[in-house]
Length: 294
Image (cartoon, rainbow, N blue to C red; front, side, top):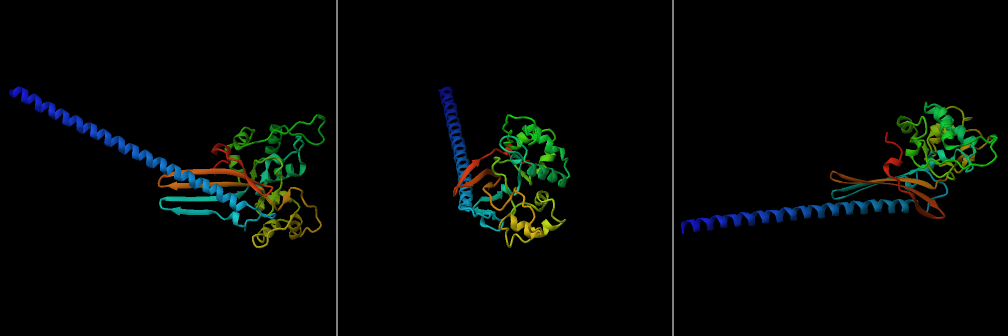
């Protein structure tokens, strides 16, 4: 009898231990499930905030003025916070930079004005001017006086990973170039005088007196340039030739946004194009297709 009672006690203890283990397993699984639910909720909230930044950018750019300048609402960043969520979104005028896909016509003939401007920009950045020739060769461009008769379309550089394939365009070179050049469809060939850097503008207008470009650019925040002729006049070159590459409007913008929740972060990068009174998503590149980090 005593043996049977002992076995019963042991069995009871085993059942209690088993029940406790099962209860612990259920609690652990339940806690894991709640953690997963909370993580999913946080991800969904962050994605909603990123979508909100895209909507914010579209509202800022619609309608975009014929004259685009850095003193307009689109140029002001959007910073916000709601509890543990923090976000920031900025818009960059991509036509404040020289479009490397506009160095030639769609038929692959080099645009002399744009190509020479690129060579001068390289020199100003203390980079080899031969990089321009290297890019032209890689894209299959030819000079207007070339003997070829059959037109060949130019090879477009669609993103920064492709630019890395061009001989000489190392990571260090691309880091230096990133603030001054862009990779857009070739028809977006004008550089906006109201948002471009003085260094780039000096490369585009080589006949300007030293320091003149930096001086007139200081006044554009208060009084943006009306057109390219206005810029040339303020340079003291009234009646001079107006480079065809210069303009005061823009239709391509780069949205950079981020959302942080404690240690987690999500980002959005999108290129938006304004056309016919509408703002459409031109592309949403992954990080590898964007300019290299400085």
